[in-house]
Image (cartoon, rainbow, N blue to C red):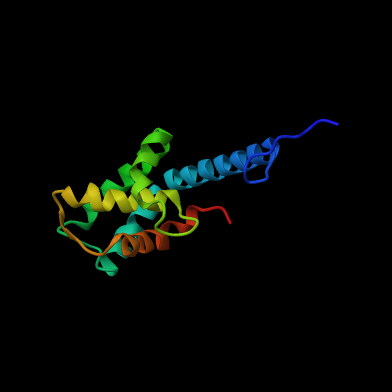
Length: 141
């Protein structure tokens, strides 16, 4: 009888590969949904960020356009670049939506410098929750 090597988590390579394939399918699905619904999601996200007092802006439309543009760019980004951006927030919540993590970092690092943003309020978790309350629809059920 042969010996079957297992990884430290007790899964064989086939199980691990199946999980990786499933995650990749989910990731592609989420990115397709984000791209396909960019305008609607951007509008809802800006409204939610305003309602939750996360952002103050002089132009809702300019911020909506910034998010729409970003939603069209994220699917074409290298996975490394996305992972690098979200690395500081990986432990923020259990089972995070990687797109919501990315947007949380985007809001606190990049959007804050947008000419139409007056201020950004809230900690990472508050911002993530506001973002995820809109973007949870892109996650497979």
